[in-house]
Amino acid sequence: MSTNISALTGKISGALSSKGGGGRSRISFPVVLLILSGALIVLSTVRVISGDINVTGTGMYIAALGWAVPIGLAGLGGLWAERAGVINIGLEGMMMLGAFCAGWIGWQYGPWAAVAAGILGGALGGLLHAVATVGFGVDHIVSGVAINILALGTVQFLSKLWFGAEGSEAAQAGGNDKQSPRIDDMPTITVPGLSDWLGTLASKEWFLVSDTAGILRALVTNMSWLTVLTVLLFVGSYFVLWRSAFGLRLRASGESPVSAESLGVNVYAYKYYAVVMSGALAGLGGAFLAIGVHFYQDGQTGGRGYIGLASMIFGNWRPGGVAMGAGLFGFMDALQLRGGGSTLHAVLLVAVFLMAALAIWKLWQGRRAIAALNAGIAIGLLIWYLGTDTLPKELVEASPYLTTLLVLTLFAQRLRVPKTIGVPYRKGEGK
Image 1 (cartoon, one colour):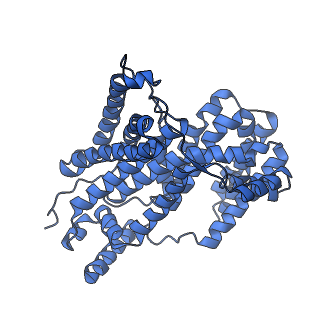
Image 2: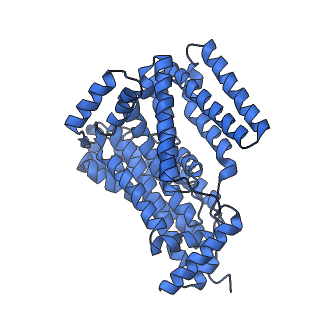
Image 3: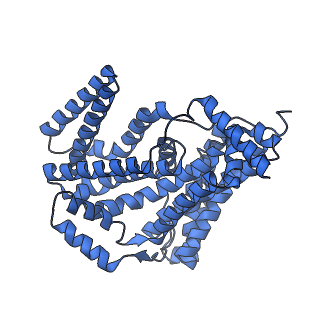
């Protein structure tokens, strides 16, 4: 067994090298700390200049965390499937199934039963996608689109049948054609002494110290148990996929399935495992949405399955990167809903600092043309900031989606896609 794993590791390394992305150095932990410190300094500076306390306010980051969790779960689900070579754009539909099942079971049996039902509903969507793509070789994009359409029609039909039927128990409990009856509250976690102390520090409005305290307080105040579970799932996914024999075989199924099969790996089984897990994670994201507002509602996912895919691409198919992408998109959602045009206007200064830093970095690399372009963008954004007091409502509403497009555009050149992603595979084709 150990010989097979060593051989498999060597073949995966060869596959990575042949793609040209394996030699790129990884960001070390000290560098991550340096980036986080720089980000805190920038946010503190923006808060002082703009005078908008929402930029580093606890409420903003509690909201951002709440929006980031379902996006992160969808992105993590996409990572599981695509690391095994299966494109999963059906994440949106699997989230719908998870949200509906959570609403259906949750109002009757409570929030934890809703969690289990959401996972099961999403897993069933993942199983359907696996049967179509792995079992029958259907084009992955076609299957994913079909699942999204099928899920939408299914939840709307069942919502009318089960929640909105006249005289039914669900209708009497407050359900209707477009939403379930109310789900009980999910318990939250607050660390009393630490939360109060951080709140006191945040109220002082000291540069950097108060801003850091305000952001950290969001992590110890009214945090959902599902948020804690999500963090554990990200950590667990990293160890399972990158630090275990199971994960090595699963990734081999996406990088070099012929080589994996030659070493005794059941490629079909690992692809099935990955896609069902992908659906289960997306379903949990849908359940989080339903439990967070206490009921399932038609249109509840709001495209977060697709944004989850964007976070996966931003994160270069790695859990840490997915978490960062989800945090970014969650922050933009929170800005749209809580901060409005004035806070988003303040965030323009963050973009100015980022583009200026990027210009300096490109100039240091000797890429003067790109450095000049980035500097020009920074100057343009600064003029925009100085010439306005707020941003139009339409731009505020579109900001999460514009951010998605911008991020995908900027990071498209640094991606290392799993080698055989989307490629149909048939057992024995390498013989």
